[in-house]
Image (cartoon, rainbow, N blue to C red; front, side, top):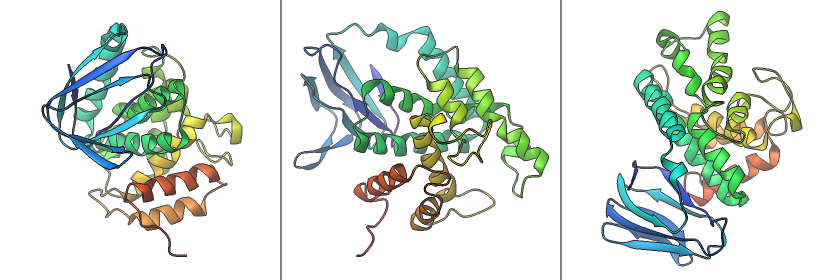
Length: 271
């Protein structure tokens, strides 16, 4: 049994064994995916299955959903103690700061939009998926009066905020596998070395951290906060393009713009 919250992106990836079959039955809610003939809506009572899948299929939940999932491949790792610990950490973030929780969900959505365009392999896609969800989890240690400060942060307060990348790395490094702790550590690093916590540059920064850095910045600029109104998407995109090749990978910025246009979040530029 799988529960998926509203407005979440999720995906199904080809199994490592070619003949693995997965079957999904929708008990409650609705989702959509982009099929060969346009956008397809699936709801209660609908079902779908995958067999000999060649590439990832991406879905969006239109409401909260409950799915019955059956697979021919053992998948006990998905309900393991480690996954439960990760979910508990995410719950703590929601209780500490609802903005950070909502922000992380949107960043994850943007990252999956880019992953779809990049046709990322399974291991990198999985790392990106979890790292995006947990990239700001270290803010659980940031005092609430700083997180919700309506004015400009002092230099000392900003130094405290900057610790969240390392704090998140420490919190996640023993909970999961592969590179997600390093991605979380690096998501504020920038190509020219002006980022934090270590000021690394260019190819020293993991590819997935570069993707999250773009999505994170875009959502931060376009989100409403108690002390300011979010920027229009076009203005935020122009700022990313201005810093393309300086802070952000130029090709990834270009793909991000295409992804936003494809999903209707940004209007195409008139030629």
